[in-house]
Image (cartoon, rainbow, N blue to C red; front, side, top):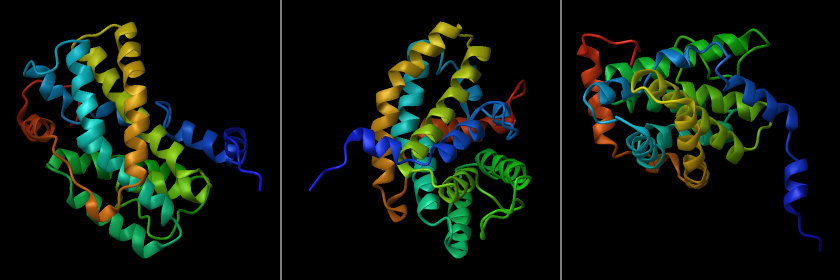
Length: 231
């Protein structure tokens, strides 16, 4: 019996769907990701993130234990249930309920709404996806699933885009140079890969997080007097 090789697995992917997802998660897609810092603006204002090393530590923890990991679990769950409207609706409710602050909920719902509305221009959304009651990782996962994007690379791409957006935030606010941003993203690559696999294997009932400093920063950001970002 011939076992599939890595090349066989790669070429069996739906390349059109994977390329489409890459575009959806790029800075040019109109979801307004550039307007959200996931509490990082507050962390920078308080001196918790001040350089390349502290930015790496902050993102490392988010990918392994914070919002980035939870989002990754939701992406995987939505891919698996993309054609089950009731499941997608429940995943949306759970994703919004798990938001640790008002701003985090705004981040989830507004990016989800913008993503759904943009994708809807190309055709109807999956049942259970409502732009007026949406959670970003659930919408991304549902559309990835409908376009036959394999779960693991989809999760990995999502988390990579999450981190790249926050690196861009730090480059503007710390500030950091472009090469520092590249170094941070390069160090995060194996961490993103490992935690994407862990998220893929995590049941939605086991979802949770422990990034308390990030959660508190997101709560305090609501009253930050001078700010550029919405969250």
